[in-house]
Length: 238
Image 1 (tube, one colour):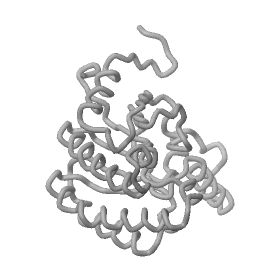
Image 2 (tube, rainbow, N blue to C red):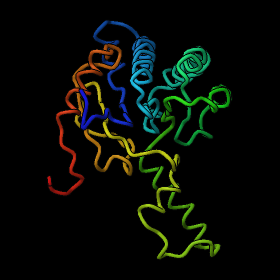
Image 3 (cartoon, rainbow, N blue to C red):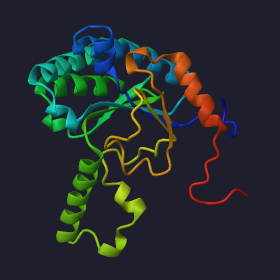
Image 4 (cartoon, one colour):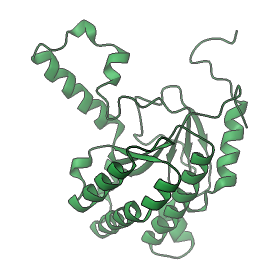
């Protein structure tokens, strides 16, 4: 399972297939999202036990606003309840919760509970659990570019000072390391506007398994596959 003696430090997951899982079970779509919350709980707990440094979950994309209003309302309520119910789990596993995305556009009741959970966990020293909420990779790059444009206009930044490394500090979470492994459930072969800047050299692992069925054994399978890969970052093997 290990790669040069190390597990991936940062795992990112596109949690896809909740709706299709529900349809397969002949249930309402929201039941799929509820079932998916149990997968979040198990995988988060397992990654924390393995001392993974960061787990980033694609919880709600900007594109998700296109869904029916009733489904969105139920999703926001589910998110609020999840943030409240998982505080004990976060505390017991020494997890620090954070979030990326245009958080200010989420309903106020979600922002409130998110802020409470983040504040309560900010001194925890274990794994960072990052929720991508109202997140889009293109929007992250655009928002970073606007910040840079503002500093250029104010004379706080010179064009020649803009590098890949300096650009990173304008992203939503400047101190976040690039993901080592990106897991996608549901079988779709695309990255869906997720962490576009950060996943340039991330290893991808896709499974047909729908997210509500994804468990510890499937995470182990992904880690074992990751361990077999040789990461050269565009270079050659010495």
